Amino acid sequence: MGSDNERGGKTVYRALIQDLYRTDLHAEEVGIRQMEQWRAKSRQFTTDSNIIGRVSEAKRTGKGLPCPEKRGFVVIRQSM
Image 1 (cartoon, rainbow, N blue to C red):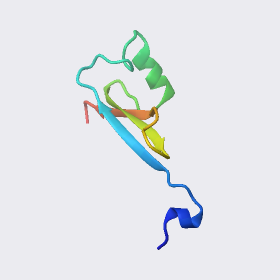
Image 2: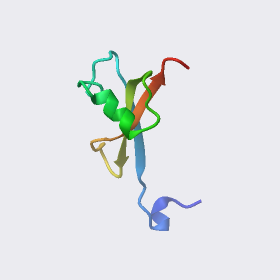
Image 3: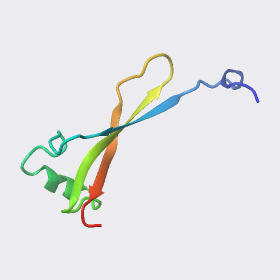
Image 4: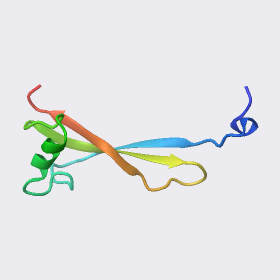
């Protein structure tokens, strides 16, 4: 098999970053109506859902890692 340079392509690496929160006090849940707004946007959020982390993605083409973009949440349901 040839390398990516022989095919004329440029190698792109994706870094998936999972950040789990230590406490329940974080930016995604701060606010009086924040959880209600998340429930209105997605059917996956229910009244017993708890956000415990965040998933981010960064595309790396050269040296260094650019700022990651937020892609989603890690959610756990209490009543399952």
